Amino acid sequence: MRLIFKYLTTTFTFFLLMTACKKDTNYNNPYLDNVSFSIEINMDLPEYAPLKYANNSVLVHNAGIKGIIIFNTGNSYNAFEASDPNHYPSQCSTMHPNQFTCRCDCEGNTYSLHTGQITSGDGQYSLKAYHISQTGNKLRISN
Image 1 (cartoon, rainbow, N blue to C red):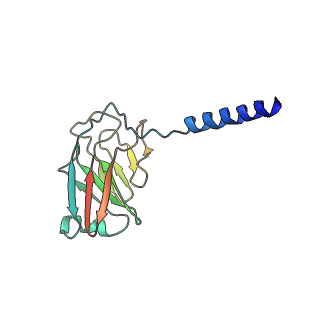
Image 2 (image 1 turned 30 degrees about the vertical axis):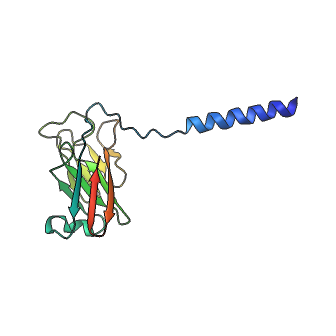
Image 3 (image 1 turned 45 degrees about the vertical axis):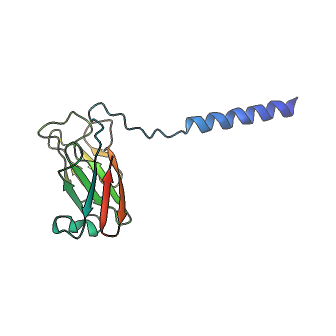
């Protein structure tokens, strides 16, 4: 009887841990709509050439809500929505990259381009990440 109780307790604990650690991959932000797009960036073009080097970023205006910030981490690439995730898009909500961070001119919120997390300012949402893949000197970004 004691062995059965121990087995049930262990199984229940394992089940509880597995469900508690489930990662939510949805980005449910009331400020930013989900827009569908797919673009290809050719890093051989002069405007995207900085992306060939670590810790450089480029703001691309023709995709996403307010554009996309692409960042070379040194090992891979990150692509984030350029609209501040902690308020509705407006004339001042487009963020501008600066080395390792990007900043919104509305409230001065600053975010890490390595992690997408807010580094200064107020807000509960991190940057909205987009899928990015690389083939040679071309990057494909999509949502």
